[in-house]
Image (cartoon, rainbow, N blue to C red; front, top):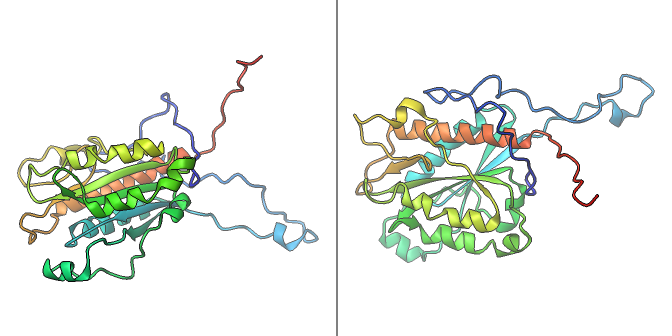
Length: 268
């Protein structure tokens, strides 16, 4: 799947079991079937035939740009959701900063956590799914994230990411600042790569309808409000981010299940 393969799940299959609180369905959250021969019990068999190979986890790359840390907070909580699904792990990456150090200092931007590696276009083919996070700039993604997508031309030329599921999460300063349009305008990046956009819809259940608190996020993906920069993501916003990570992990598992296509007799 990491190389762009995968199958679209049948419409006859049951929907992903997500409760009003976003809990995973145990029937879906099971062990990933491994297509391999059982290890030999014959003591005379070669050693490599008697060793049980470890199960390789599916990987979702959580690629983000965060100026003042709000998106990074969401990304870390999203990873918790991904890691909560058996057989799937979330891997955090940030994109390259494009502003000069003196500009960042003047903006009082916090120093980036160098334990999170910078994503390179070449490494994207190793992912089984993506979650891209970025703050808004006039209703569109920040220039740093757009510069990263602009660097993926080689992958686009060979359609290396075609068929790979991907979703978005965002941060805006105000309620009318682009919680939906920031994700909506980013879909073009996925379309040209042939990637499969995975919104969360209303799978968060009752949490999507709460009106008693200010909450970022939309059917397009998780989100947070930063206000003047001092407001941090609320617990509801963090819960939505965790739900999106969990939901995407279940989608990636479904796409990774082995399937076969009927023979093509059109040329017979």
